[in-house]
Image (cartoon, rainbow, N blue to C red; front, side, top):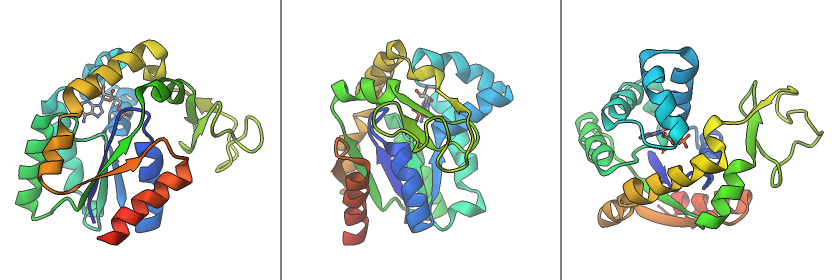
Length: 216
Ligand code: AMP
């Protein structure tokens, strides 16, 4: 089974993708994570992407398509993948379709996670993650059980994304509405789009996604 999670930054795509990885044995393909790894490694792509990401704009289609083309052909993707953060433009979606047709692979569901813009700023600016295992937390909605200690791995080091600042969030939301939201009618026309309420709590959103996957 192959899925696309579609929704604005902060909708909970990464959180749900991690849960679906565990529950269905799928691989999460997060282009944001790939880019952050490229930035951290100082690679040529990382150097090109760093400032664009810090401004909250989109990295070029050319870079993103090359990145996903390499990743999606790796053997671990054959049992199914979850695209998280890709495609983000109509060009990316069209090239993805052609790429998958060549591989004889199809997208089973595109799941739109709907969230009010007003809620997103608070969600994004409050989030942080364990610096060691990547487990996600939030200042208000999801604190570790023991203050300052990661529930999953016990680490006491946490980090926040540079682009999760309020100023940058506004640009990221603008990029979403202008460049990514047009993908909703694109996938609706293909009959694969299903919406879930991203404002519900995390477990409820997971249940709604599971209903979509299991109704198929
Ligand atoms: P994310 O972790 O998905 O919120 O992505 C963080 C940032 O990486 C975005 O704000 C973009 O600058 C960049 N990015 C991630 N995926 C894409 C993509 N498919 N196309 C263009 N830029 C992307």
